[in-house]
Length: 113
Length: 115
Image (cartoon, rainbow over all chains, first blue to last red; front, side, top):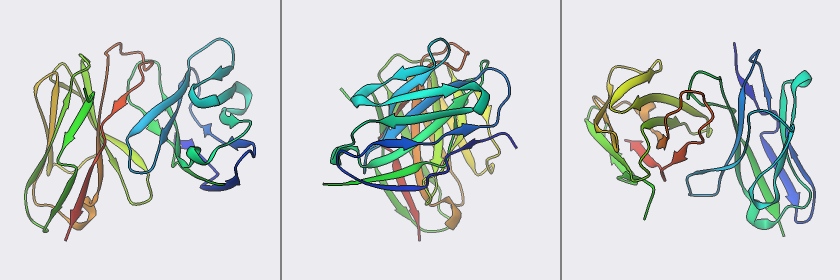
């Protein structure tokens, strides 16, 4: 079945550590890619998005993601995490002719001071 | 100046009851959505409306009925509530382009608990 996979279910890091969260999708052809973040008790917010062009995209709060077409991946990275980055992170995909967002299962990130 | 607002924030009720969740957006968007987030945090789309017309209707029990009185509102009515309906329900909105590129703006969620 076509889907979005996030293999890291729970990541625990110390402040200043580097972060990489995996995201793979199984759709062929063109896709639109998103990362959303959900801070504890809050709504989802957009971190960054990729449609085309430079495969390395920068988002808010120092996050970036790299689209690797051959690997069907869109991994999220941050060089140095902060305690305030503790949240649930969701990768999501849409196809070109629909606004239907397909979410991954999410990755819970805990950052300890 | 809340962009997407949902009421109520919490809803605790018994099995078999009927309940509604309301959603309003003041962003001027044409498209609104309902998502269900289960206990494992998995988010799945339920419905989408564009300018009051249903455009996405996922495999959802027909006990769930969305209603869009105008493009700024999308309400969700649930009949005969079951234990499995316990979840957080998120409303979202986006501009309409039909190309899947518009980020969606989410409400704070409604936590529904069925006793």
